[in-house]
Image (cartoon, rainbow, N blue to C red; front, side, top):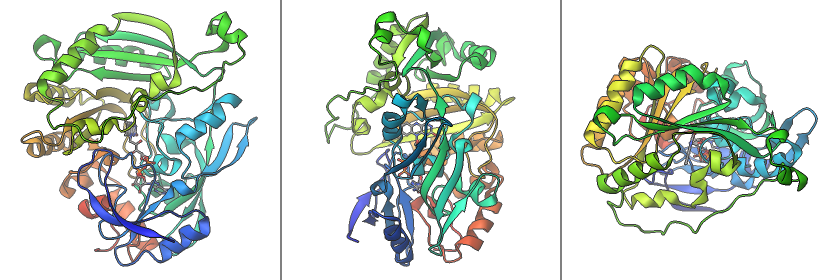
Length: 456
Ligand SMILES: Cc1cc2nc3c(=O)[nH]c(=O)nc-3n(C[C@H](O)[C@H](O)[C@H](O)COP(=O)(O)OP(=O)(O)OC[C@H]3O[C@@H](n4cnc5c(N)ncnc54)[C@H](O)[C@@H]3O)c2cc1C
């Protein structure tokens, strides 16, 4: 198989590293790639939407799994799909929506693969109702370090280590996934503005249970009485009888249409996203939102994936790239959340992509991120002076409150805090040591956070 050595980064474009990129097109090629990946090991990669260094491997091999992208079988009566791990959620939506089925969990972009969805055990706006992606996985075919392909099912240690295991237990080759039935491809959406953080948290706590999907965009540059003001967007799949007659008459209630603008240019100047420009954007965004609007019909891309409309939007942060910081703190730790929001807004971090959400029950994956409570995610230009030290301080606060940061977004956490954040870390390491004693599967993230089975 041809393998070029190329620089690889995550979506945040920080910390690039060079690796041999191998693109298997058959399972046999994938087995061979794992067997021959060499002393620096290998790691699976999907569409590279993890923000940090999870899907890269300096000096080793990176297995680009997007060449294995077949949808093998759809049970249109029972609502399941069996597909290769390199299939994107975008492709699944194209195939499944016309049949009246939707993916059980989608993140803020549909350009992620099924393998990446399992590897990070991704969550969506419906976590409080549906849990994370792996809860809906009925079985996996996993290629392990010994070159064997194992069938892995929920409730087993290998499944729980693989769900959220960041590709470190092996390469997911296929998955069987339980789907969500829908009558239409439209969303019925309620939008409200919240005046400040307490107002927002009260609305989420009081009424989130009424909605399948819920998320709040939060203005982290607002200060004083407006600290934490937000636009709350919640909804569910629109039933057939909610569609205007003409749309129903057209007989296309399940059509899935997407549109994309021209890509962001490959080079944009540093500092485009300054406090002034982001402050202006946030001001406009907040005031443009309706104070309260109920039952608006929106297409799936507009509701779930607005950023997918601009290919390579991550270039807007310039060459230095950006850090996405996402943490969760449990219920009862609202004071920590309030303090962190206040600190971020006082520090004037120019963040225009900041969202707050309430998680439901924790997921079984040993390194799965969600725990019941509050999760905040924000983008910050990596070049912001003093950012590293500031985020280190936030890590301490989060860990001190029993919370954790999300590994799929991370590129900078220090390893000392990991055990406090992920209590099943020792189980994960022990399973890896037994399953992969030579440390075949390794990534930059694994080395940085000492997740690898052996010292490599
Ligand atoms: C705009 C945007 C919005 C996002 N919103 C959310 C969100 O709402 N919720 C959320 O949870 N995440 C979110 N993410 C993060 C994203 O969903 C995850 O990082 C996801 O893992 C990316 O999938 P990928 O296919 O791009 O995988 P990659 O980024 O290529 O890899 C991610 C991890 O999965 C592993 N992996 C990939 N393929 C396989 C495989 N076949 N077998 C084993 N392991 C594999 C990799 O080794 C790596 O550890 C968002 C990312 C972006 C860019």
